[in-house]
Length: 335
Ligand code: ACO
Image (cartoon, rainbow, N blue to C red; front, side, top):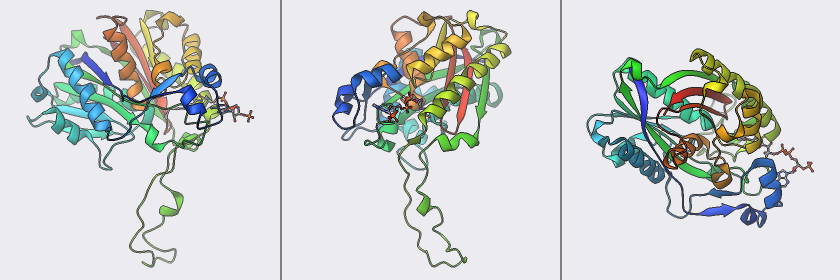
């Protein structure tokens, strides 16, 4: 059995925060941010906005494009590190979409690699598990975990949701040509938003007594990042991963129509494209408008590129995600 991409959609919050807006709250400038990252604006959830609402909107657009009824969806994968329920958001999204005919829904947590992992998981479920219509949603709201006094991180992130529908097809029509996935917990120290340290050893005291009972409620620290290390990791590992996925697909950088990377930093996009000898006009980039939207960035950029007519039916895309964990991975796709 094969699988193919048959629809995409995306949604972003209304509130737009420009670099000049950020310069009013931290010591930075539009020029510094634009030159170092390529980012000019980002969208941020505000007021009563909910990430699940964005995820549902993106998924509905993907279903409309694919002309698939919600009841025919048999799996919903919500790729997110910022669910609005500790136990995950996927079943709530399934309910809101009206997928009622006995579907499965669960969350995947892998930061900015989440969407690629979701895509490959969808393919595995279709090829080996008998599923037919799998919604893969990438949605994150890292703005809720950013330290808005830290100019090294608060300039980077935005909130968004994107979705694709992956459908079972005959093996000759298969649209996932190859993939390559990795993780390295050693690098977690360079990028994390860990549970607060003093809340880790709360259940039993050091002598095994229950003196600390009942436990305190837990919460997460803001995002901590060593930008230079993350940059080096991305530029080293992402081209290797794409080359490996291309090799499994029997392809080369010159065979692809589009390079679609997680939108973290324009300088990372440029460096990876140079290593792979992909010319700039074949690199999809929208981070000037949205910043780094974590698991949402690849389906958001794909959706814009498809709806603007840039990515056309039959085009080959090398997509890669990378980020916290550390995690990274690539997939060679046909639109
Ligand atoms: N405005 C002005 N100056 C700043 C700012 C800012 N917003 N941020 C940092 N600086 C200063 C620093 O304090 C430093 O000053 P100093 O030389 O006096 O000490 C100087 O600028 C250089 O700082 P660096 O951190 O060395 O700057 P760098 O060129 O590495 O750029 C950046 C920083 C943009 C964060 C870059 O390292 C980067 O993009 N890294 C990758 C990050 C990334 O992609 N993370 C997301 C991964 S996805 C996920 O899973 C969440």
